[in-house]
Amino acid sequence: MCAKKRHNYKNLKIWKLGLEITNDISDILLEFPKHERFDLSSQISRCSVSMPSNIAEGSSRTDKSFRHFLDISLGSSFELGTQLLVAKHRNYINDKKLKSLEEKIEEFQKMTMGFQNSLD
Image 1 (cartoon, rainbow, N blue to C red):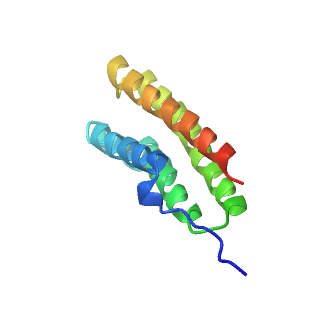
Image 2 (tube, helix red, strand yellow):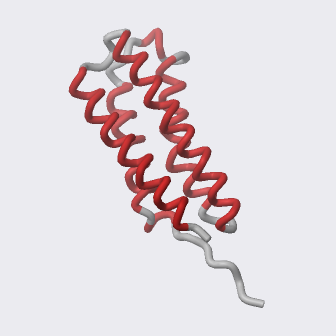
């Protein structure tokens, strides 16, 4: 009986991009109003951290289980996109930052779905 192959999450481009998005988010949250610390800022932070975290956790599982963790990561990325639109509406971020983050999130989503489809 052979052992199931596991993925090294640190070598996955989707994990690296997820981590980059998380770090970008951390930087912009420094500029948010203090009264948002336990509301929108917290929610944005948690879902951005969830993206690479679920990839890392899922990488230790079987491919079937990994797909589920990738689904969670994707869901967090769509949630993040919505929360950034709320932040833009409240004038916490400008159009340039929003566009840059949206492009990275879209690339993350495409790459993650492609990787997910490649799993056995």
